[in-house]
Image (spheres, one colour):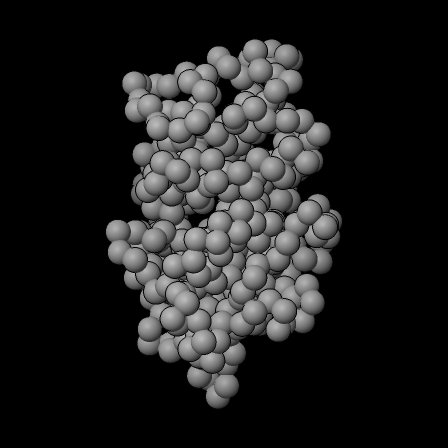
Length: 367
């Protein structure tokens, strides 16, 4: 059934999100896995509590919470403005309490989602990493892959361009329904989402220039791929994606992503490149690492990156996981065992050579 409320923070939306999460946790074997010694948990988390309908948030050390506690992560755009940050001077105060009024809207909404879904912990990059400590940033950014990989679910502020725009949006529920037309004694539906041409709502699978604001950020490629589950808050509806399934408020039935692809490869030797990333979902990398790497890199290099120095760190967590999973090695972003084919990459237009130690034959050397 189509959404009936004019906001994405309505009770129906939370009920739907809770249903998706519960179904995945109880029924999706592929979405469950245990952390190993090579992975580490975040050094700090935000603790969210609600007493008498009043929400409070504070920073806590991971050693101060139950072992292997279930936590959420937030995927968001920083935007042109700097959001609220953890610094050494604020550390002791934040361990006691982070004033709710000081939280940017996106952070506040994410904490509220965690509470509404019945959980207590969330990791937010700017509030859980000491932003004025080079050592802390290097260590935590180096563990970013494990942080998202080990999270219960990622909350993605899909439609927000910065931390002040929030997760929740107004919407007209009538615009999400098919139009029933009666004429000359006949009744039919126009813009039927399953049978006719309907303008698709901007969602997580949009690519190129149609990507939602969050997915223009390069870091998000890794965050989305590594998270076993993601709950997206779009401009009109919410979406669900896990390793096993996809869903949305328009099509709430969880669509199985792990069935065999019915389309045969045009060239068996290049079967990995013939698969459709949009159809199977970006998290399919967990299941078949070699199938989607080139497509993920294509999305990654088309995304915005504020600092050239982030070119490798922003995808290294995913790369390291895939190397462990596949037993293959990467050479400057190219798979060593397929180096002849991998080195045939090309850019659609002239780019900018980055000042880095990467060789010119690697895509990591070019913007």
